Amino acid sequence: MMFYFASAALIAIGIYMLMVKKNLIKMILGLSVIDSGVNLLLISIGYINGKTAPIIQPGVSPSNVVDPLPQALVLTNIVIGVSVTALALSVVIRVYKHYKTLNSSEVRDLKW
Image (cartoon, rainbow, N blue to C red):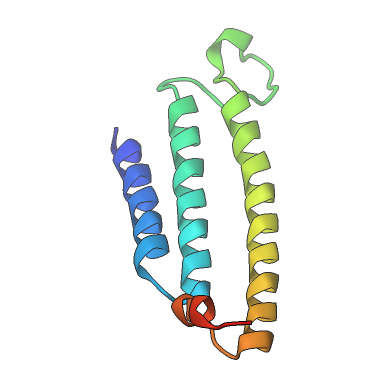
């Protein structure tokens, strides 16, 4: 139950960073925090007390392991999250080279 609260707190902190912060780098960090909160939520949903990891071992029956689907989803989400973060940082670098600022409100106020 504690992991649900921790994941909700991470998601809330990330949303706060996206809505309040004006620096583009801090906004990308907020997206990463949200991504970590979602990963923690998926892993905590897939956790069953008393079960083992889905690794083939001698003497472990298939009915005594957890479902490997949430773990596979989290691994996929990590790869996608890193890719999105890298793409967002490359866009921020281009914005900084063009506008010489990372403040999102100043970039919005500039006219072409």
